[in-house]
Length: 581
Image (cartoon, rainbow, N blue to C red):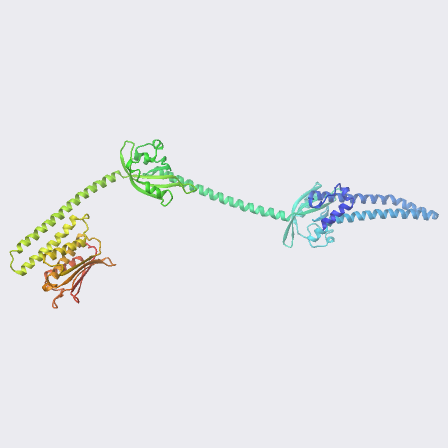
């Protein structure tokens, strides 16, 4: 509304022409602080000119009026004529005063229509007047400002300082951005000041740039935040670069000084970099290796060894792989090496770009292994030969006992000879199993029990259709220290069952089982469904040689015996899986 009033004043009056302004649509929306100062300065000059003209007219008319009054006193007869002239001049003066008042009202209308604060200030820093916009902004009547010092409201120390410097200097115009605080809220104005009346006063026009200033402050704050972030990122980048430099330096030192041969290759196996240990291993210089591929120094028969691991390494399903292979040195020596290969660098698509090879010369170790292997083979042959000879010696003892038993007529003595023969045969069978087994340290106990019981059935002339046999072994192979006592125990118990459990060719069944429990204890069970032990037999104190052997061997194994005679005879022995020797 204020801009419309200002436009109407400029369009209807002669002020625009006086100021040299050509009327344009929406003129005020295009005015800046300089143009606004120019308008205000022009309006002030118009008012000064018209005021000066009226003052000059008054000064010119005043002597005439005085003369007319004197003439009127002297010549009453000319009173009417003089009165007429006086009225005419008074009318002209009234018309001039009306024009002056109209110009003043137009100026006030223009200033009130300015969409910003306008004030007139004296040279001593006091308000001569303000426009309506400024008064409304500070919520005071315009007349309150007249005669007051600039800082009486304490709303803008920046404006007071700016005007104090401007009024004291010799410049006729100046501008500055100032902050105005009203009820704890800040507004920013671009102030344009212009002196008039030879510096005796100044007019100030303000343009509200609060939004622009707030945006500028926000931009400054954003720039500061961005600068802080950039500084932080820069510091982080420097830190990362320093860590990277240290890491690269450490890698370079490790790479160069490592006693392990290292080589960096491309995806086509071209050698990019090698350390001295690698050169020492294969006998080539670094420059010579730089002209080769890794495949050029791999023993031809070993070229296909790493094909399968490479298929896992390329897509990242494994980070590295290790293998033993052979290399050809510069002087055509075959070098056994332990090789480890890993991806050193991948691209943005996670495809390998560089590989790291690590090699350790194990030629001497392989030679030592071959020597040890040959020595072990020799010792295995020797041990088998020993077991074979022990078995033969035990067979000879068994044969001697059998020959000797032919001359014994006492049935009880003959039984003792036969039992001794069976015991010797059970031990011989162990040694036979060992020299026939690929593993000299362990015995397939299930096969051993089957052979042992077959021999017993055949020795006692037992028909397998009359007495059945069930064998169940669920444990791992046994060592000789466990197998021999267990074999002797089974020999004694099965022999007793065959001799006494089934009188007069009675039908029956013998069961043998060997298993382990959750406490790593072995459980050997031998049972039959025969007539059982005599009621008056004390198993723990009987003088029977066979049962005494069972008790002693059980103690040797560190086990205990559980006897159950409720249905035939069932002997259960618990003992550790290994012996503490």
